[in-house]
Every structure is written in C-alpha cells, then in structure tokens.
Image 1: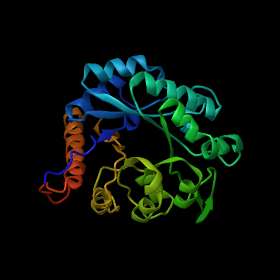
Image 2: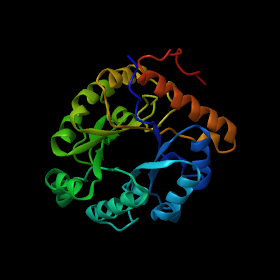
Image 3: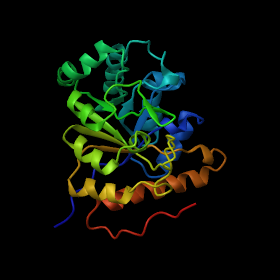
Length: 276
C-alpha cells in the first residue's frame, strides 16, 4: 500500500532576521519548500500581509502559518496588548491564506491573556478559522535555579491550559525537558512543531539537524508512528551562511529531505546528515 503523502515541511523566516525577506524566500524556494512560516518582526516589510504574500506567490510558496510578534525584540510591534496582537494576526493569516499562528505563552503577570488562552481561544478559532498555537518556552537559569517569566513552562501545564500548542525542540531542551516525553504529553493538542537541534549547553541555539545532542531521528520516527498530522517548520540558525548563499540552499535542501525521508515509511533512509 502506498504511503499517504505527508504535509509539506515548512521553514520559518524567523532565523533570517539578517536577510531581506525577498532573499530569504529566494533561498527557501530554491531549497524546494512549498510552504513557509512567516515571522512578523521589526522589519516593516513583514508587518503587513500584502508584501509577504506577493513575494511568496512570485516564488510559488504558500504562507501556511504566521509567527505573531511575541519575541522580546518585537514587544512593541502591533502594540503591547497580546490579545490585540492575536486579533491582528488572525486578519493577517486570513489575508495570506494561513490557517494557524504561533504565539508565546503569557507572562506571569498577564492574567487577562492567560484567561483568553484557556477560555476564549477555542471560540476565536471557530469564528476566524485560525488556530492559535501557544509555544513551549523556557525559563532563565541563574546559578542552577529556575527563574520563570512565562506561565506554563512544563509540557503538561501548557496542554492543560491551551486549546492548541506548538512544540519547539530547542526551547524544550533549554527548559531541561525531554523532547520525546514532551511530544507524548503535547500530542493531543499539538498543531505546530519548530524543529531544530540543540547543543545541550543551556542556550537556545536552533542548530542544524544532527549538529547537536537531540534525538532528532527518533523524534521524527515517533511523529511518523503516531501519524502526527500537524505542521512541522524548520527553524534553524542561518547566520553562518550570510555570505554563502549556495551553501545555505544546500543546507536547507538537506534538512528538508532529511525530515521528509523520515516521515515517509516506504523511503530508503540514508544515515544521518553530514556533521560539520
């Protein structure tokens, strides 16, 4: 029996913060991606849907998901109200044809936002058609002690509190959680995965696949065996390739093929990616 076609692997524009958005999309198209995740940043080009949509369409790319401006460095983009950001991002998603957005969990003091995630997000998705996936985040570690800024840092707390969730492999590692165990906990509400490796050094490195310590191959096998049907978006650092565009495309192509092969049961799976 033929293996069902897998959902196209996405790639996030988030790590391309040092690139023009058009150049980032050129690289993603050249690497064979069909779908992408656009991150709204401080770059005005990303903040309105018309230009990203035009750039994507010109390259045969579909914007399948949008990362709303919830990073510390994008704190003031679209205002300071997290619920207002979500409503604006839903309009953005509908303009570009995306069916989901990724947001960060509430800070400890954001009670209204926390209540919205728990009690109102489901109705919002039903009304707008846009899923709001709350992402796994991590604490700061000071002298070995956990210092929290966000709510719901543990996988079980996140899945208990939110209608849809997003799993970030690098974030979980900084949070000192096992990605395989976290997947099993989050799976019932998991809509989106940010996939990268991590060095296990306490930093949110977003390394290329198989360049760190994470069991990425086993993780992808678990996704395949459990028939995971949500989105998978590569979110790997591209800083080292700023002056090496050909090598950037090669790396992105290898990474995409690596994931696709491991999610396709009938494929001949080569042994890993070359280490650098």
